[in-house]
Amino acid sequence: MTLNITVLISGSGTNLQALIDAQQKDQLKGTITQVISSSETAYGLTRASNASIPTKNHILKNYYKGIPKEEVELRKSKREQFNLDLANLLIYGNIEGITKDETYKKPDLIVCAGWMLILSPSVLQPLEKAGITIINLHPALPGAFEGTHAIDRCWKEGQEGKITKGGVMIHRVIAEVDRGEPILVKEIDLIKGESLEEYEDRVHKVEHVAIVEGTNIILEKLSKKKDSVSKETKIKLDELSKEIDAIKEENERLSKA
Image (cartoon, rainbow, N blue to C red; front, top):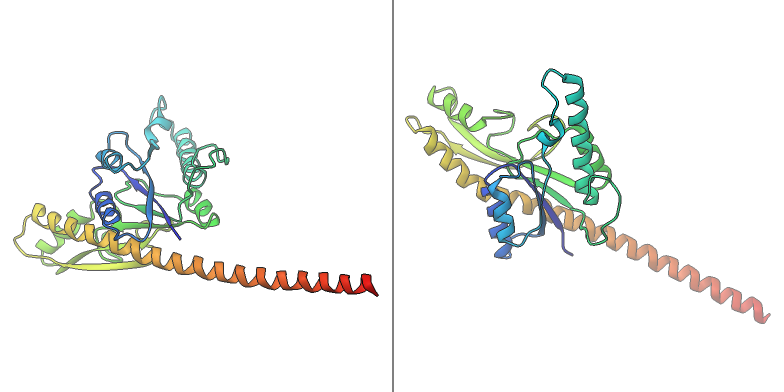
């Protein structure tokens, strides 16, 4: 049973590339069926195209076009529309929220691989109702350096001697940023005197391993869940078939009486 994966990106897509490489080596327990970017210039779109993976853009700035920053409430409503449209794009393959493309493969799993926008409840709740799991890669340990610039902040505290370990985690996505249940955690030793660039390079190397491992952990769980549901459905259908056969036999007996 093939599990469908949608990858969300915003930038260069090196973690997407790690997933693509794993898929091409048959080391990914699912298939990347689409990549959605929040930036039309993201190099990750090129990586996806090179691997013959369909791509789409969902651009927040297009919703704000012509609206000055002073129009706070109007911009809020446009952001909410962006969120609702994103949920529809993920579930139905279009922002209208209708089933019009029979070939569209709804994802079993969404992987945020460098998606730089917060996913609000108006995105997450429809996904949950649709039975879609969503996970994220964050370059810090659970409970540490939530939000943006996590690598920089972690490195700085390491150089100041406040902490000795950084890390990378794959976690479930919830409304609270970077606070979802950890799926996979990898610790990284902080080295005094190491430059930010050196630390960042080490983090990215760990990320490329973690995103594949974490994705596979969830895919394995989803596969087992689907198999269990399929078995339960088969048992119920078998029982129903037996009941129908019994009713037919009884009807035949009565018609002969």
